[in-house]
Length: 419
Image (cartoon, rainbow, N blue to C red):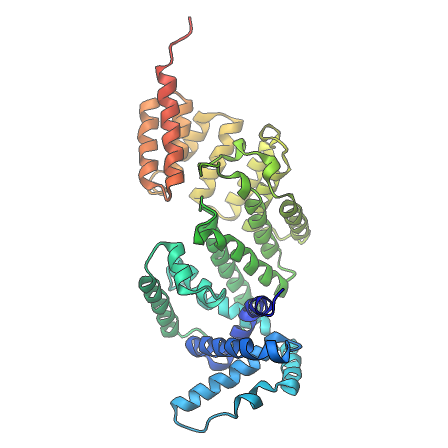
């Protein structure tokens, strides 16, 4: 690995911890981000010549803090800091920083940084954009391409998000255990939003497709600093099980391949094995949560070598438990698929019809409803539901999948009846 490649990897790995510490110190997101960027520039200039520091994160915090103080002093027209050579000579200071990092609440620094990005005042799109920019370090052009908007529009979106966070006055005190639990839940939701933003992409070359990998990296980071949290284990297991199917989810023509039709030999078995180990470890804590239950459902699918081997009874029990724990029309909609396998299309349709008012603008509701109506031979109603699904599709692949269902229905209707 070249010096530059190693430095890029080290900077990316250190970013959340170092930026979180700088944010705690300066209590200003813009100053902390500028200080970290300056520290990264100095690392690129000095590390190839002097060699890597013993602890890159501590080095970046120390240099970034001094750089930030220097910037603040210059703005105030006061005394500047020592020269670059003095600042970069951090041999003793690094050791001191490392000791204090080991003894400090650096976990709360990272949690606070992520929590700021998923502040409840921000819409989900702004939460994702801010997290990708601040925590992951993606450039504005990268994020803009992923969301299919102009760079200026994305810059404005991130600027507005920062301004709203600053106005909200996020507290910097160490959170209590209760607050930490609440924040972990919110951060987990934000990470899963990032994952789904990438997972929904049909084209692996699309910028947003990499979001799933970044979400998994963030989940690993959170699990590293909170290793005994079963819901973080469940979240990571869930994402690994879902991403394991990525090679089989779309055809060579970028058409959606349903789970039951996928070539399971293409699934990523190392991801599945890691996820199953994580899930088993999480369940031993006997504190089941929504992510653990969703991961358990995905695990049942992953253990079935063929679609016909799927244990739908087990999946139904898990969905019922999930409904009790976290009632949601979307969860009921997903359970309806299981009901259709166990009890038939009519029972599944009876289950989802009351959800029409809440899920009227949801693509998957109309897609499933159309499929159930088609099974029951109600072709005109099925066509109406399919048309509604196409209108709500989020991608060309989703729309094309529904159109194929309509085409199959029309072909079946024109076939001569056997005598």
